[in-house]
Image (cartoon, rainbow, N blue to C red; front, side, top):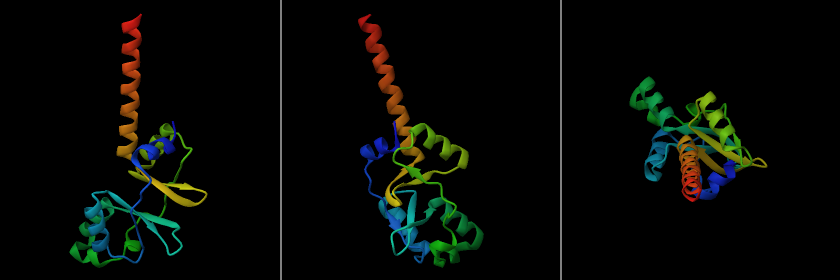
Amino acid sequence: MTVASILATKGRCVVTTRPNRTLQQASAELTLHKIGALVVVDANDDVVGVISERDVVAAIASRGSDALLDTVAQHMQTNLKIAAEDDTVDATMETMTVERRRHLPVLREGRLTGLVSIGDVVKYRIELIETEHQALRDYIATA
């Protein structure tokens, strides 16, 4: 199974922000959409970073409430790990675990087509295991 199968279920809508927005504005977007991260895009809609709730909390812990006036660019993750739609779910889960990333932008031909979170990957894996479990039960019941 691939990242595309996760996106087919959850959807491809991605909430983005610009590097010049403030952490206050980014926090408001995170809260409004009830999400954990925003993909940061430039004026050409190229992905340039990710800003997560953890990044906001770290900025506040470091600089206090004044950090909310800082730009997203000052605190976003720029050493991105990217997923492709044809990446396997297992490979994506491994990347997220090894790289300690909770969100991966998904690109196709350099364009943003989705965002997968560790929660999306775990949910998908649990559903797969439950389906396999039910298939085994059905097989045993008919044997």
